[in-house]
Length: 228
Image 1: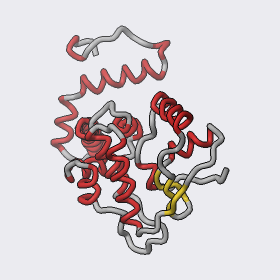
Image 2: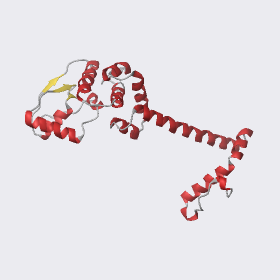
Image 3: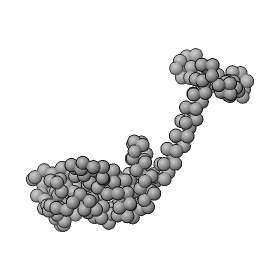
Image 4: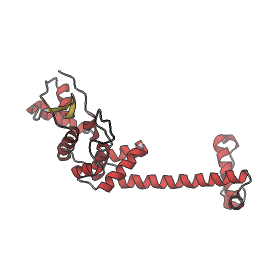
């Protein structure tokens, strides 16, 4: 059997679950390969699961070659899989975001296969949601992305959660900057703010010491107890 690699466009969709694939494979075992596998640039553009099933069943595959341009190839992938797969709105948004992030091979410019608007239309989602999905992809938060791809988390919820984390981190950064300015003798107002927070800082310092050296840990008391 001829070996084919998957085209990058075919990988934007999440794979079938093992249970779904097992049922799909049994259908091919009983009824044969219904549709040919579509090749583009010598790789599988459409039919990854058909190819895998035929490999595992040790059957030759029927293939056709797609001769269209890169945009048409991307449109074909989205159009065919949109109707086959039962994806949530957020899963479709991530697929659209992945698609408009990819660049055709040999492309000397910066144009993706599809624009955000084109991918959003083909996947039946709003452009704003696709742009949120693009920001989520850019963040590199693999845990959040995996949850969205698995249908466990919405894009909007993931973006909101990242916003909360960023706000918390920004507060810590600003506090550290105030501390640094005070230690270097700059900023009277910074010094006043830090002085008012001195009990809290002492409390945090003790807890950090407890973490670094548990043998010296003292009973856990809050700053309000007046013992720190």
